[in-house]
Image 1 (cartoon, one colour):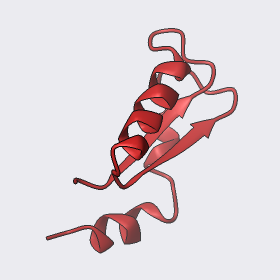
Image 2 (cartoon, helix red, strand yellow; image 1 turned 30 degrees about the vertical axis):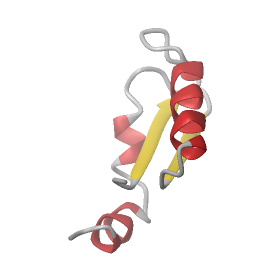
Image 3 (cartoon, one colour; image 1 turned 90 degrees about the vertical axis):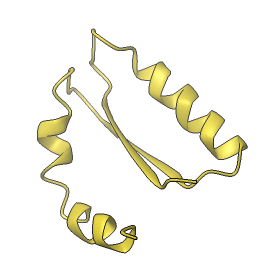
Image 4 (cartoon, one colour; image 1 turned 135 degrees about the horizontal axis):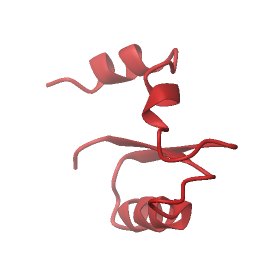
Length: 65
């Protein structure tokens, strides 16, 4: 399984936030390593917040091969 960190804005009108929630639930159900961060009030540009996550660099390094 590939570790996955899903980022989504709860105000996203392009892709429903429930799509990410459902995908994360399915990955967890299959035994996958996944986490979800939902940003309140953020639309489709959640990557702006995601790249500012202070834990992101360490998370990426922790999951390198």
